[in-house]
Structure formats: structure tokens, C-alpha cells
Image (cartoon, rainbow, N blue to C red; front, side, top):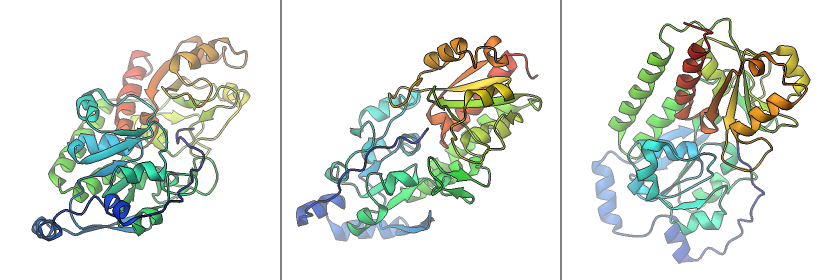
Length: 348
């Protein structure tokens, strides 16, 4: 399943006045900061996943708790305003390696609440409701009590997303890339770099248009496998893989399933016999068959899968884990799947 979940850590902490100051980004010259904020059009208030988020000035010590939000902030040129990152499923995007190298990595998975506070955040952002909820790093209320605004990607709380159904939740309405673009615009507004946000959205939209131009994949069925060989997590209709499928005009073999990442047995997969299998190439070590190579080995040797059309014809498309989550890398997914369908001769 795409969302990395860790055991809940204790957030019990004796909050001394010094720690409170650190958690809020330090004391500094309050009068000067207020003057700069007013001149720059602050405070900024956003509605976000049922919360009202207000920042009094552009954050200078932000902590990003998921790779998806981290790569947006880095893409907006905000590395010098980031105090830490966490929860990585893939190597950072190549074009962001230099910027990312200067940002402290607090943890590979969920850091403790204390570790985040030690970084002195004045803004905390996450890709998933669960990261800032039960079983995650800490609740939004815990940060907000310390005066630290929080933000969660709207893709994980968009209309129709139910995070209380277990696992990674379910969607009654398909996710669209507009949710990702909306996150970019929100974060650009919070940091006072709206022009950069619009430029990034324009570039992503242009890439989608170029990748799908003239594509006719209406007769192609795709299956998306994230991880786990015994009881595989496969994409339902309406998350990021659904957005990729709709963008290229193909069909999802499990479009009748509204769970984000349901576990489906291989016998059912064999019955549906997809034309192409899109596989997650993960660097983490949480489930069985994480890497693309491990997945392909399993598919080619398991009696239930080795006779699948996609397996016999070696129609595999390898995507990063982040491309299978709602993120800027979903656009990478559109480009890679579209290119592969053309290479396989399944579409013009």
C-alpha cells in the first residue's frame, strides 16, 4: 500500500518555554517580522481538509512529512526555507537532488513528534491525512496548540475521499490532477511565491498535453501493482493510477473497485487478464516484492500469473512509488505509461 504507516509514537512531552519558542520558529524581531508580513500581503488564510490554516508571514523553517509535499516545495525553489523532511519511498527527483542535499532528513519514515519539534518548524505539511492524524506523527491540533500551522494535500481529502474505510481509504469520485495543481498553488501562496506556482502548474499541464497528444488507448486495459506478492495491493478506480488511466484514455482492469489500494487475489487478476501491468519500483523495505525486478520475477514464475497476456508479452511499465500517489510525479506516470503503450504497439 502506498502510504507508509509506522507504529504510533508517544507525543508526551514537557513543553518548556524554550521549546515552545523553538517549535514556533524562534523568537526573533517580532515587530520587524510583522511589518514585513503586512507589506507582503500576510496573513494568508486557507481552507484545508476541514481546517482553517493561517500563516502570519512566509514560513522560514518548514517541515515536510511526506515525499510528495517535499518535492513540491523543492520544485518551488524553497529549499532554503525547509528545516526538515521525512517519509521517503523513492530517491528524490534528479533535478531536485542538489536542492534536497541541503535540507535535513529527519527520518526515512514517520519521525517522532519530538524530532519534528527539535527542527523548530513554523509550518508543517504532509501528503496524507494519516500522517497528521491517528497513528501518524502527531495530530494537527497538537501542532496548532504550539502556534505551528499545518497543511495536508487536498488530494487526500478531496470530495468523495473517505479515509475512515480502512487501509488507504476509498473514493466515490475520481481524483483529478486539479487537486495536485491546487496543492501547488496553495503552498506557493503560503510561501509568497505565487508566480513560481503558476509556472510549475503550466509546465506540468504542458507535459500532460504533449504526452497524450494523438493517443488512442481506448482498447487497452491496465493493472497497477504497488506491492506485496502474497496479497497484492492493486489500484482501484479513482486514485492517482485512475488519473493516469483517464489521461491516456485507457481502462483500469479494476475500475469497479473504489478502494484506493484494495488487496486482490491473483486468481481474480488472471480472470481479468490485463494487457499491460504497471508496477511500482520501490526502494523501501516494507512489503514483499518491492522492486520492479522482484515483481517481474514473481509474475514470470508464479503459476497463477505466468500465463497472463501482459507477462507472456513482457508488457511491464515501471513507475516510482510517488508516481502512484497523487503528486507532481503522477505527471511522470502519464508520460511513462503513454510512451510504453506506443512502444508496445498498442496505440498510435
